[in-house]
Image: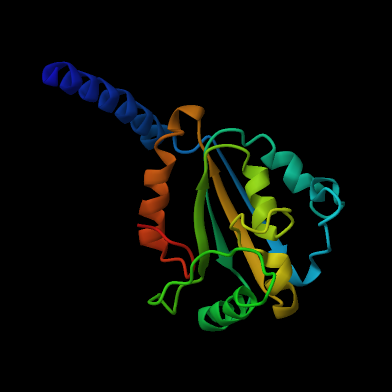
Length: 189
């Protein structure tokens, strides 16, 4: 039995390493960068933001991101990371607030990265959650509509799309990039 399992482990590792080798040679299969001026976010809680005039093109493009995606939100406005965290913390303790990522006790104060994440499919849905337009309050996301709008935060979303074979490996990339980019929110262990 032990030998059979060892052989299966070796075979699985070989298949997984082939997928990583493909990414090493070819990179991701797609990339998009998009800026959100949170002060200009409208209330799309009762309508589909994918049909909004201001964001329709973005959502049409990311609908093609059907496989796993590694993404991060970069702070591009002038607020420092401490002020961003404080604004998010104030929202987090409000009664009825939606779930936001963990605020680390220790963080790199020079970091301009708000959050690093991954999704195995339906990337556009995850973006909607981060914007704050998802109906289920327990579903964690940045909830930018609720706290970053009045704060005037501007963020840039960077998203890297991968082939479906990377489904099980995108989590490893998320951990690597979270360690390197040092986001000011989110658990990455």
